[in-house]
Image 1 (cartoon, rainbow, N blue to C red):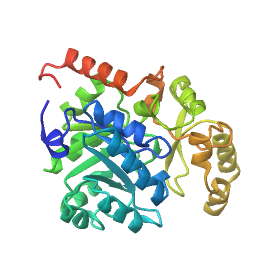
Image 2 (cartoon, rainbow, N blue to C red; image 1 turned 90 degrees about the vertical axis):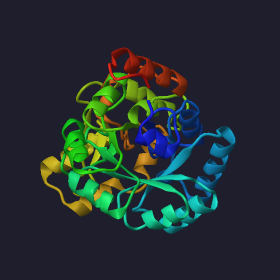
Image 3 (cartoon, rainbow, N blue to C red; image 1 turned 45 degrees about the horizontal axis):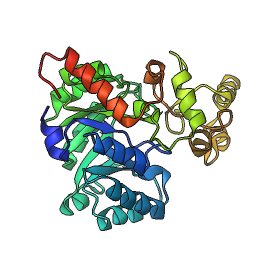
Image 4 (cartoon, rainbow, N blue to C red; image 1 turned 120 degrees about the horizontal axis):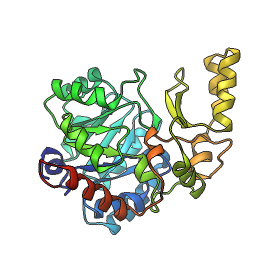
Length: 312
């Protein structure tokens, strides 16, 4: 299927791999791009010099388009932007910040810019800021999330109704049937995180990948809204947070409990007790760790088998 998303990014399929911290290194991004989707490196879990290394390795691994996901809340954001421009990256997905900050600068360098939002209000601000595409993410998604808890099924048609630029659906999408549903609701592409987290090429620890495929319905929950809402798998750390809430707590106590490096400890180092285990609700539907190629074959076959609107 050719549409505004495939044309914008120069890809075969309107399928984008989420730029997940501690998952989205050059192996995953290049594998997704090689399969015809858009792979994204995650600047959020890389020091600037590490990001440069992954960009170069991704270039060597694929001649197809790939991009970088840039959460705008990190202190070294300016250095990250400079590296992206210096290395000739052509696609950037920004999040967790004002889309006006770097969009025009990046576009002047010939870079396509998409911004991730969780509400109609911010989708409209993105359009006003001149971004090339919007990713609207429902609160089913893993990791850091919107405060309004709007589901993808409600968010996508509302955003599609009120913006004119290309729309990508995210949150709770892992199958071909769900891709079709997102497009019927008004999206022209999808961004998938959790399904690609449970692949052989993802850089997360094997312990965490195994935990993803063991997850059942109800095993994730949104928490830490006082700091930054995040969807986590329930583990020892999660239940310690729940105990703090039950006794009455404050923002400073939660910040102290969270500390630094807890996401790395859980997802990258494989500490399933003390680490932060960020994953989406759709993990309950995933029961195997596949290669990226196997994921693509499955979802495209399923999409085509149910689609009356044409094939991908």
